[in-house]
Image (cartoon, rainbow, N blue to C red; front, side, top):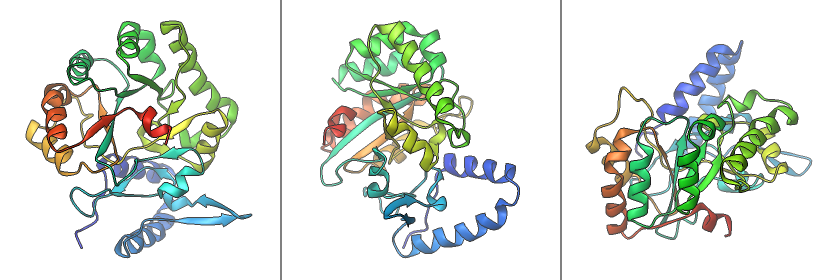
Length: 288
């Protein structure tokens, strides 16, 4: 069996949280051993039952992560599709259909989004942009262009905090509703209630809160390290990851700040289409 590979994004976030939390190293060792044992057995599912309700366990909380076992096949997440579905959350679509769903996380603007929108328009592809509140404030024209060209603008919180440390509904609601209000002011439209936790950091309580506010939470089943502005991947590295790991039902996460993504997107969409993939809106997945 190939060696289990962890996302760099997930590892860095998990390590940071572990270092800041007193006494977590012992727990980390136990959970790591359990996690690797599960991976060796071919499953990364971890859950417990409380009053008859399956709850995602601590080992499957905190940081969204993926394990790719076979090229071209869906990865395993650190929570199963069934566990996430309890909270109106998901990380991929139907693994029997050659369909993918393209999403972008947008924390700030550095000149690449217009090129990305141009490529999407050329291929008649509808994507979802998960934006923070300050992005809406600073880039209302781009937000309006997204909506006018048929893209979904989702909620990535106002301040991009570690949402797993937000314990009250009032604070959680403030992070999301502030973005809703800014979007309404910029476009005159109500925001689609799609939510992505910053950095994929989450907790069961967060997922419950999002569901109570009417949100569907979207993680992802394919991403790569594209967010370091001063250390962008080469086009070859990007294609290796985004073509080699694409799989039926994939929810793809890219960052709109990436110059590499802006440069390759037209060709990438062409290559995915040549591989037989249809690129659909998250709204199609939401309706399944």
